[in-house]
Amino acid sequence: MASMDTGDGPSRSGRGAGQWQNNRGSGYNSYNNSNAYNNNRGRGSNRGGYNSAGNRGGYNNNYSQSGYNTSGYSNQGYGPGAGGRQAWGGRGRGRGRGRAAGRGPLQYPDPEDIKFLKVMKGHTKKVAAITINPEAQQIYTGSADKTLRIWHMETGQCIQTIDAGGEVDSMLLSGKMLLVGLHCSPEEGMVRAWHIEQGTDLVLPGRHRGAVLCLAQAAQYLFSGGQDTTIKIWSFDAATQAFQPLIEFTHANGGHDSAVQCLTVEQHYLYSADWHGNIKVWSMQHGQCMQTLPHAHGPSSQPTYAGLVMGLLPYQGYLLSCALDGSVKIWAPMETPQPNSVLETIPNYSHPPSSENGQKEEYGGILAMCGTSDSKQSAVVLTSHSQENIIRMHGLPDFEDRGQLSAIKDARALAALPGGMIAVGDAAGTVKTWQWR
Image 1 (cartoon, rainbow, N blue to C red):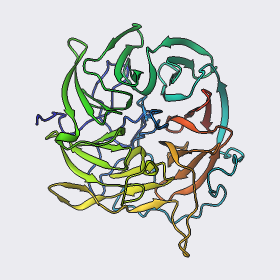
Image 2: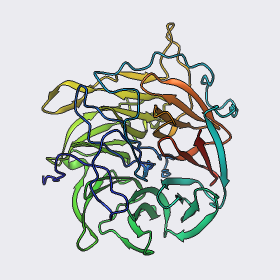
Image 3: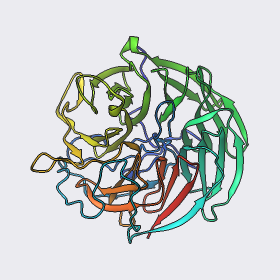
Image 4: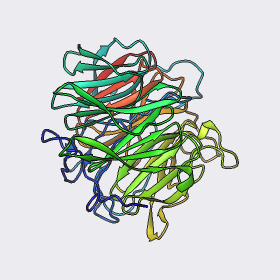
């Protein structure tokens, strides 16, 4: 199979100098719609920060990440230090202890280091994708109501409403271009690209059957994952400003056998996950599947939708995954790389952990996950849980309880800027924003 030449690994999408620009650096890069990666996959002390693949939510044909994951933003030298292998977990959870889903909404005051900003209403159905553009001071949201909305970050006012041409499933921001995965019918899905400043758009050639659940980018390559179980790859030609179909991963050539819910890219690898709880690692160099973690979430004997993986998040050489079973799992890189193995096959840590008597706190199924850093540049992971009205926040790598963001139920889309804004879209179409103090 053809290889994808990304040089010495994918870099962050450029900003302000044309789309698909390579803009290398160290530290942290936040992407708000399942489309993030860094260049620090190396073992030992050369591990950089993490990338946010948040903005995933919804299931049964409803997707939120993304998560877009995707307004690129670089923050140098953040986080809890990078050296050696991380010691995961171990911190008391204090306030915000979980309880079984379905027992009614949880209410907590916002953490002292976060202030609430705005409520933005306009969408009539669930917000499926969200991303923040700090340069333009804008927030972009996509909804199942078949519209895109552009909001002013400071005032919270809706600047523009765009007819998306279908129900929005995913979103990715790169430079001046907003890429949107959507479906017009149960059998027709597509990726549309809007040039933000010019106001023009185009439909990428080669369509999915059904929803386009996730998007990711590496250098000039665009990846999409669909309800039809395929991963499609396009190459962007800067001269013609056009996308050309390149490769398609299907079950026949090592791909997934159920809907592809999330994608993220880090260094030489593309990570993907599906509705049966499987995680796959793809070689960017050789264009083939290198490793499968079968039933990474949910029961191992028989796949169920409890194991549906809703988010993937690279962090300092590790991979975080979350699912409808309510857990976040940490997958460590192989100490000694093998020809067809990149990650350890047993998770390094699972949250929430079991207690000494074997009991485990029960969280609702995770609908979305997003990574960011606080005003002190400490890494924080945000998760939204079904049948709860909170966003849980935990510090990394110890999963210290950082409190909750309340009064938003079944958030399907998350986005965040390091040390800056947090934006959340819910199942009712409401968008809310917070700010680190």
